[in-house]
Amino acid sequence: MQNNKSIKELENKVKKTIKKYKLISKSDKVLVAASGGKDSTVILYLLKKFGYNISALHINLHLDRYSDRCQEAVEELCRQQNIKLHVVDIKRYFGARMCYIRQNVQEKINVSNCMICGIVKKWLLNKEARKLGADKIVTGHHLDDESQTIIMNFLQGNLMLGANSGPETGSLKDKKFVPRIKPLYFVSEKDIKEYSLIKKLPVIYEKCPCAVSSLRIKTRHFLENKPAEIKEKIVNNFLKILPRLKKQLHEQKIIYCEICGEPSRNQICKKCELLNLNKTNA
Ligand code: AMP
Ligand code: ZN
Image (cartoon, rainbow, N blue to C red; front, side, top):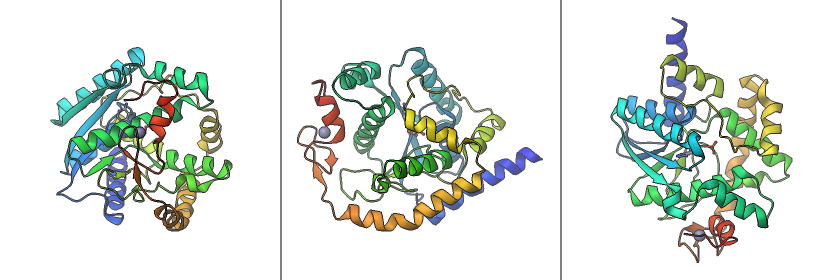
């Protein structure tokens, strides 16, 4: 009975977010970025359950056995749910495993593991989604992720860093840019985990072995035991100022990266800026 209540509550919250922010329509071709972790697995499962036109994309980062286990978990869910799965192998794309790409960048500049990995993944997701003709990219970002990011940006004295966030990344309007959406925006990590356990979904619960970004870890610890209402307040307050931040961002022109041709705010996109340091750009 309790389980049924938790399931219904989470499902209704996701439906409400999709409706309120007009995230997906039934005619949209939706690509779910599926890491094998609980968050993206739950949203992949839910969007299939709700009857949307979805497929999944997994990026194999070649972080040894961890990446194999993640890919196997995504394959298992897609098999169970009859979802078309696309797999991108980072080695085939960049000729190197994520650890090697990162190491090369970090020999030149001081950037965190998660920052490099995140930039490369975002770049790959957009490029692949466009190639597959997707209208939207779905990620598994949730209430805990988003409240952490807002606090982190605040601590770094730059809320503008979050101007491209919210349930939909809507500031980059460009034909080469596929909007990224976050239907789990208002759902807590705890509830997502509970849902995945109740539904017995194939999930890799262990954290990425390379996730050692110190500011994120400190912020996560700070917020960890705070009630969900506090995190809701953080995101809801941020959403109130977001239109103003987006307006500022809109005033910046979108151009195409001189190296890879992807949409960017600068002549060279972030991915090429990082990977060019070690001359392994795609
Ligand atoms: P992270 O940046 O690792 O917290 O992941 C945030 C979201 O990005 C996840 O919920 C997924 O939707 C997506 N994602 C992360 N890693 C991968 C991956 N290896 N393949 C596909 N999507 C991913
Ligand atoms: Zn580029």
